[in-house]
Length: 446
Image 1: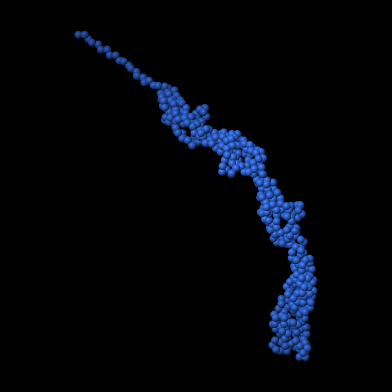
Image 2 (image 1 turned 30 degrees about the horizontal axis):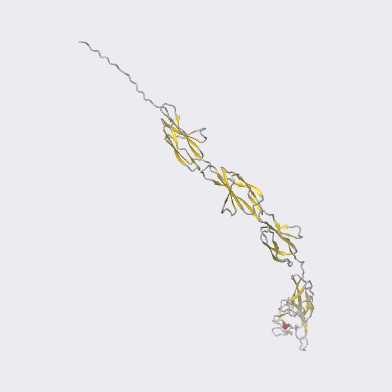
């Protein structure tokens, strides 16, 4: 029997899994926006390997920032500037690969800028240029309006300057600027050429003649065009003083001398003009003088000694004679005040008063012996003084007689009906007319 030998052969097999190299793939989603209000996403396709991260650049790919996204889409929103995106892909142990780049273009918005060279002119603008500063983009055209911006007319000019000449009414200008075709345009600020009409100074009117000391006088500026800057005054029509007053009218007070007045008017940028000087004439004061106060006896006549320049008139006594003369004769029955008024050639009136005190003769003694002569204390015309009062005192100050009104009835008999002894007594006689009561003595001698 043959012996069989078994040979067992072991085969060692190694299985290797084949891997492909990294492929970055292609991004899609490039687009452009005219505003920073934007949103969207970039997608990655056709890549081999694992997305390690996405990168973004804002300087045309000169430098990149890792934004840490490992998905196949990368979102964005409200980008303020153009941004580039790409993805970094790695497959196994192969080196990383970079995807294609997608670009989100953010167009800079057009900026109209500011117009310079406008302003205010008097009557005519002359010749000049408007300019635009601070704009971003291209000037498409200029526009102009002569109806305060309600309607605009296109001016075919794409320069940053625009010439103007001899504008005589308010005219407005602006420019329309664009930065990228298809994106919104912007309008510059509005330049305004304002034309001011010439200043008209007008004239001052009012009362040109005032009496000395007149309290108020209204001056009025009329026929002017422009703003009243100030009123001025002068004593000599040469040296002028500002009154710091800018209304169309002005009240002057307490005029005591001749003064000149004028107003200063200015319209816009046109030169200021001054009105012709307006003279307010104040004649020198013309005082009335009624004379010095005097004292007369009852029934006595007296000549009033008034004087002054102008037409005289005396008042306050209906009995006055020749009241339109400076020196009338009067004979007052009681003390009076006479007022003289004088009206001069300018109808200015001044006045003065004089007091004429009338003294009623009073006896200093009576002889009450019933002989019919000097028996009573008689006051001449006492009946004209209905408010009179008499009080008689003895030497000790006791009232021995009183009467109101007094009717010339004191004959040495007291108010109690007793005969008073012969001696000196004292009395107070009040005529009741406002004059100071008369105080004196009286002797009783029978």
